[in-house]
Length: 371
Ligand SMILES: Cc1ncc(COP(=O)(O)O)c(C=O)c1O
Image 1 (cartoon, rainbow, N blue to C red):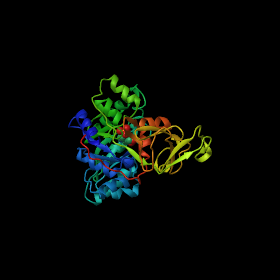
Image 2 (cartoon, helix red, strand yellow; image 1 turned 90 degrees about the vertical axis):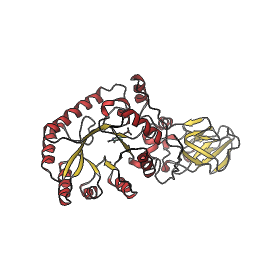
Image 3 (spheres, rainbow, N blue to C red; image 1 turned 45 degrees about the vertical axis):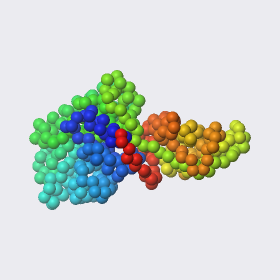
């Protein structure tokens, strides 16, 4: 599915736009090294991470691709950035100056990417800071301005994209200001999944694809906007299935109270399956009493509170449910499916958080099936 989704994006963006696989945060819970290997085999030219540790883990696993570090790298981490040929996203003059010194010391020009503030008001340099950055970079012999980048504030949140369009205009203006200041960038990038799906003019030189590469729509609004704009040529396939097994099945008498806090009372003699997964594994506590899991191809409601490492599912209506039966928390079994979006709705969050919080310590099994 991962390969299929990336191939879909390759077709959608064309061959001149590089694909960046956003594998930060353990590849949104999918397993960073497993995902990076498949994404690179599917011709993603860049790997995008949040921090230096993730970048070093990729290099340690032998990845020689271009690695963009999108989050903050502390000044004392910059030596590693240079040593391992990483691309930091930068928005401080202090960082530029330190990279310049390190570059000159090692007789290299460190390729840096500046983050432009266009409306998200997180990291990024303001339009009025362009002259100072352009001058510093122009005079620096140890760095080169490889990229200018920005990130959208609400492109997934709405079907009205006026704000995103204003961000695109600001980004265009700022990149032109860098060019006019004698400091042109080799490449520009702005697209996350929703932008890549919705606006061809955000594709530029690199699309940084996270959630949609994992086969999940960034939001219902993005899906609707794609339909509205007739841009629905891409068929996203969810990559991840999350499974566990029944650890015990127990009979519970009518009137018995189940789980911490005694929040659920059996209204009939019931059969409760104990599942060895809880909020510490990433199964959100907000799913208490509202989610379903799949057992023997049927839905079993979660009863009572999700504990740290255990939750309880009602299998009274699933004859034969027994020890070691496979349980699907997220994904399909038989004709039933529990989607990340459904879990997110139950837990009052977004699908990004549902998958990203699946504990990195759980084993991931990669199924190499033909897409
Ligand atoms: C700077 C940046 N670019 C791209 C992405 C990927 O976003 P998405 O998962 O919506 O594709 C992220 C994710 O948070 C990000 O922070």
